[in-house]
Image (cartoon, rainbow, N blue to C red; front, side, top):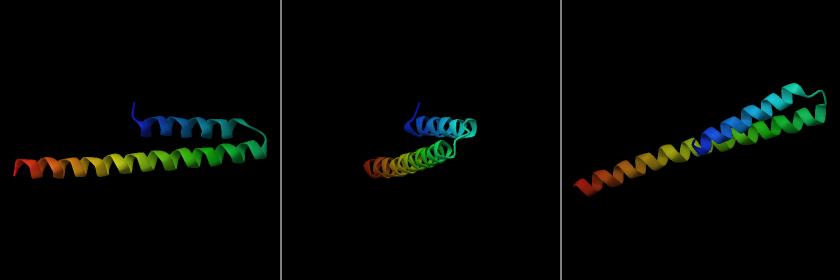
Length: 64
């Protein structure tokens, strides 16, 4: 499991918690949590993609 997968699971759990509650303040807290977890997952995916590009460029440079 990757870090982004973990973050996506936590975001889904926060969404489910928000859907299940009847209290507005708890729902708002869960939705803020969901947003934060989603942002972390997006960032982790972006970093992983950038790392792959750097590693590919480094490998190509070694071949030359």
